[in-house]
Length: 297
Image (cartoon, rainbow, N blue to C red; front, top):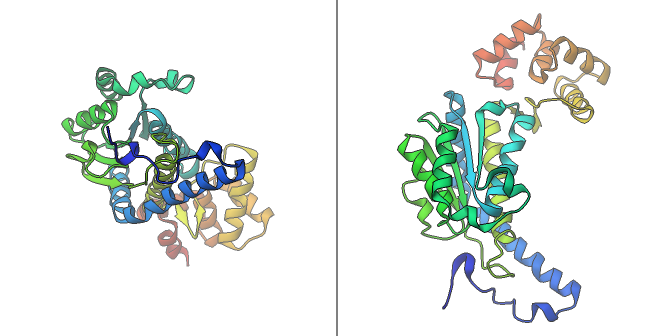
């Protein structure tokens, strides 16, 4: 029986196992590059999804990432990075990975077919109208992903759907559909490879644009990062130094005055009389540092 999309056969895969190792790797690498290139056609939809996700956070809602198997792992990887990178409260980020913690030990395929599990996970998460669900499935027909998306729609939440097959079931009823039309996998059906690569890139782009919309990016710096280790405290110091044009010692002193807030430290350097005034300026400007700087310019 012929198969297409994510189950299709790659035109150059015949004899793969007989190639010299470097030749096999070159073919695999070409597959990854082709998958990455597929993201370009989805940029408009990724932008629309980022706006939807940012609006949910700005209105007090949450982002609910959901998926199964390797697609679920891509979603989880993106979700877990948001609090540290952009200072988004962990309570505002929900991850629904089919199988939960058990899937981090054994990524069993049975979980992705369990619609009852999906319904229970979605209900326990308390998805509400203010939330935005970001649901991913390489095939676009994974029962767990479809069930979570259905539950989210029933609760009035907005739904962003990511899939790698045109006409995916997951796109039906989604507020934003992101098609990552990756070519057939070099290892047929192994969607952790090309499809997963495209998904990871799309998630990277979407969540970074969310951070920009929230005012947490300034001149390429993550100005709302959570500096909770030595490396990140040093990074916060470099960010303040670069934006404010002060030396490292002064940047460190400003961060101490601002209780570690990079944005407030930059505003203190710009002339804010105290941390309270800096934070008030940020609140007035929707946490956008560039706009808040104008108050002290």
